[in-house]
Amino acid sequence: MSAARAIGLLLGVAADAALGDPRRGHPVAAFGRAAQSLERVVYRDSREAGVLYNAVLTGGVVALGVGVERLGRGRPLVQALGTAAATWAVLGGTSLGAEGTAMAQSLDGGRLDEARARLPNLCGREPDLLDNQGLSRATVESVAENTSDAVVAPLLWGAVAGVPGLLGYRAINTLDAMVGHRSPRYTNFGWASARIDDVANLVPARVAAMLTSLCAPVVGGSARGAWRTWRQDASAHPSPNAGQIESAFAGALGVRLGGQTIYGYGAEERPVLGEGRTPDSGDVTRSVELSRVIGTATAAVSAVASVAISWLRRRR
Image (cartoon, rainbow, N blue to C red):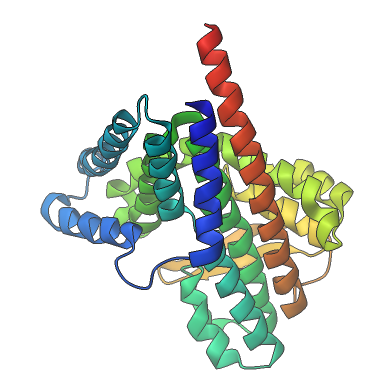
């Protein structure tokens, strides 16, 4: 069982690297459409409605994952293939790298209108008010946060809980992105989705920051700077998790992140992370390279962790 899960995780990572996300029929997109349909039915401006909404959707995909795991009991090949398919479905590392690279090319070429049009593919900020440096900063921050959310966290949950962990985590994170923000419509309805996502990412976010420190020298970054900035600045961020890897990226790349952040529903004043210069297009490229190295390291860590967890369970 342990070897099958580890092999499945690695096969899923390889599939994501080779295939990326499908342009049509992506499972996460299908889940998002189902979530929108359910929202139209159950939406109320209350926390209770939001709890029901999240429980139905997350519980449904976890149940699907449990079914897949049961099919693989005593059948290592089935378990490995089921884990691989689920891993491929929930990972976003290749698409994240492609978007970050395309953004770096647009910024490097001075094509700001093109870069502004691309930014919504990475985050929900208001792009029209951002210049080259603002777009670069937004991209580095988004690459950092999505490295944790779309690569590190799903792999770690897969190592701990197999297919239910992979699918359940992706459902939680997707719902947070859809309704967990601080707009008037979702302050109450999205409360549960935001809080559950915070809990699901508590450990992965810190593992991601630690891996950032370890991997920084591979792309010419500073391991010491990543560690120092992470320990010094992460707690100032309003999110208990996003600030972990964003501060580590800031220190690793020698840049300064944070400051005023403008969304469609209003502006937030974020704390400054790091003591370096303002990011530019070159830092966007380096952030993508760092993200890829972290993804590779996480794949190895997750495979080893899945074997170790299974061994410990058998010892009990």
